[in-house]
View: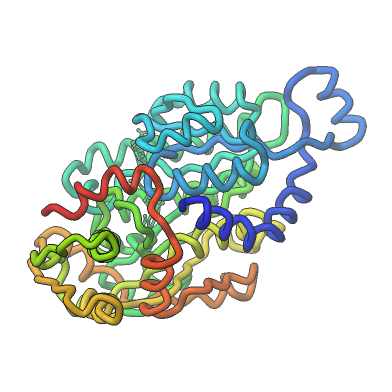
Length: 386
Ligand SMILES: NC(=O)c1ccc[n+]([C@@H]2O[C@H](COP(=O)([O-])OP(=O)(O)OC[C@H]3O[C@@H](n4cnc5c(N)ncnc54)[C@H](O)[C@@H]3O)[C@@H](O)[C@H]2O)c1
């Protein structure tokens, strides 16, 4: 079932992935002095892109690693993290290594060993988890990003590696207003947001000073049918997984639970989101575009409140009930973020164009077309029991 989703992403991404492949074919070889000499003579040698992905066992990493491997070959992508994936496919399908991004030597060594042309830097502590442990969030966010950028600039014998590292709407604080974008004031109120402002600024610095091709997208809440990593928008995935469980119970002839789903944000909390499918497709498109004028772009797919998502789900499950029990920490974070984002620069410069723009379309995609991966299935129980 997961293959359906992966194939869908792969099919819609094939053009941009082909573009990426073409663009990525020119890299100075780093493996030997002979090839370095030949690279120097010809300007470059041709080889396939190779990816080192940090934080790869999280919500985004599992899907992105799978997409990269199915497109560029199993050996193209070295998945790394400080924890093992619950999805065995990641271990079976290609290389995996333990990597703590706060260890700069290890980041560089693995990037060199894998001859990575790209580092996809996903390791992070998300907003709510970061507020519970600000010191660790700073270490992973700030030191980890510096280590990745250093490994990118100091590429053994070759030109700098490309770095793709997501930012977040957490860079905005209350002063950004309710519609925030690339020109908005950045005064985040969370430690997570502070690490993301740091990431954007340091990446731009490395691009200017050392020629590292650094790229970043400010994602809103990324919605999939798998559990989130401790962010403020995780409620949306929890609600959708609860609905999926009810649907599968009904299909199996089981009596569905009468326990209402409990939402940790207020019912009228507007926030911006993007579907996982759009995130993967559009991220790969962004990575494959010839170097865009800006390092960082604000992007969004749609905005909705918990009440609106609930209403969309009730089109299919009229008996689906929700109670609201706001979590003080996460509600405060949500209230400091914009309702929606202005993404005209991304649309203009590299054709950001997400397909899902309504809550109904998102619900239909997640309930009927996208299937949870193994990790999601294993964690379904955890996510639905409050
Ligand atoms: N998911 C979203 O809605 C969303 C929104 C905006 C931005 N982002 C960004 O996208 C990226 C991926 O997000 P995600 O949702 O997959 O996060 P996640 O929390 O699910 O995964 C993060 C991963 O980082 C790993 N990690 C933690 N400390 C580490 C360390 N010291 N070294 C190496 N790995 C470590 C964790 O084990 C985890 O697997 C993050 O940078 C996040 O800030 C995500």
